[in-house]
Length: 136
Image 1 (cartoon, one colour):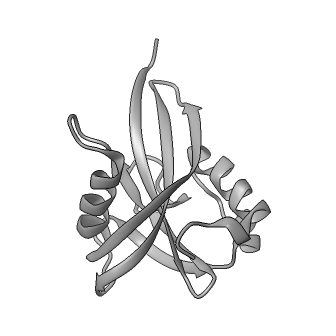
Image 2 (cartoon, one colour):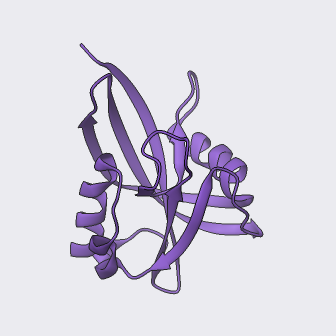
């Protein structure tokens, strides 16, 4: 049975566009696009994880909103349960720590990017339900 990893992701929305980030070379799923976030540590809530991870990865502070979507994807050695929350930047300037690139895209543009498999169901729901994105 594969190890199950709980991951939280932020759907950061600004002026109707969603922030996506490309994973750096040398990392698992290098070159794939994703919604920024990370592994939830023991004793941590997914929302607290997002605040911590986004500060570490992007140098900004965020406010998290409601859970928007959930995805479960089985890789060879582990399964990822991905919880995607709406979020908005409250302070700080963007800087890249673990990603090679970030972009702001419209929900209908998400399908043209090569996303990590666990993120794909989230992209599909965002494209279909763009008007219901939390904190937009």
